[in-house]
Image 1 (cartoon, rainbow, N blue to C red):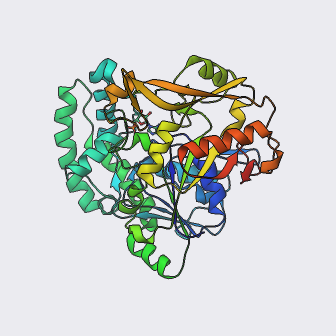
Image 2 (cartoon, rainbow, N blue to C red):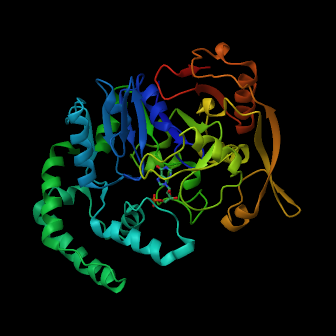
Image 3 (spheres, rainbow, N blue to C red):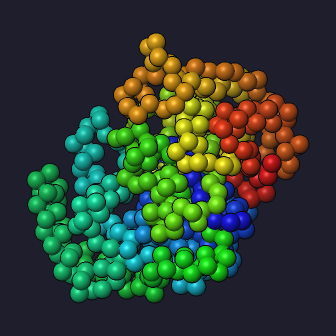
Length: 423
Ligand code: IMP
């Protein structure tokens, strides 16, 4: 398979979990490189539903090594309960198939509390975060006051560093009217999690380089999506990591010239959770999808905002990620639509954009320019080859891939592994 970076080409929730699971069959190692337990990757195997937040989806296949890279922020209590949850349903997790970078940063309760408090202060300008403490944890990393996994697994260092951080954060929390944290309680919980996780902790950079030397095929599992990237997204309505392809290098320590291919995952329409501009958002498609019971978030359960397919955004995603191949998911979500719209440009006053403007305020005022496609109005979920799809669905897929400027590689017509068409 060669070394492949998989990214979301929209605002997250593109169905990456399923595509990662499918592509993992051909990989030796799966590496998560950014984000934290704000992500929610849903995978169905038969009737069993798995929602993974931190552990790479590769864990669901035998003989695959899953790695959490240095670019991830890890909530150790969340990770322990995720591992335990997987074990309970019969998934084997041991240091033989799961490893954690010693330099990944750790999310603490003060990060979660600050995340929540800052949202309250922002009022109507809130970001709509997952409240998992992601922003404050990456903030501490950049401010060079974060604790890393190698601090977590060393009780002496954990005690010294954590007590200093809790002292400082309690001053801030009190000033915001929030309850201060008990060092004793946080230390006890985190020390126990550190002990549990210690056998999984290693230098993942050296591990990955040795694997590459031994011709291993690595899949780099992106979380969130291009427009939630801290640099390339709709700032400030973004997450706090580099979710784009470049993040796979910095978040794993594998250099760009060792990467062979970028796969972009996108829905056949557009969704977003949280606040921020979404040019093609409209109630027609939102009502339809929510009415079908679709588009509720895997991490927070929030109803996702929905819109028509936005090729200005996905073409921009191809530009910043270097997407070669596309996996288009949720095609079946459009099975009943009479006329499907696709955004091909944005209009802002007299100006027309064929890329996503950097200014979120301008983007929020942009009006989509649409072209229309006649819907196929036939169920597609039973199709198993490209030819099984109605001709209008094939034309639609080819058109949105063409507008996105990348190759149509996979069409997904349902959550099951067998509902995956390699084009
Ligand atoms: P945070 O990552 O929790 O700080 O949230 C920042 C923004 O990213 C919010 O709009 C979230 O809804 C969004 N976000 C974070 N993780 C995901 C995800 O996995 N899927 C979709 N949106 C996400």
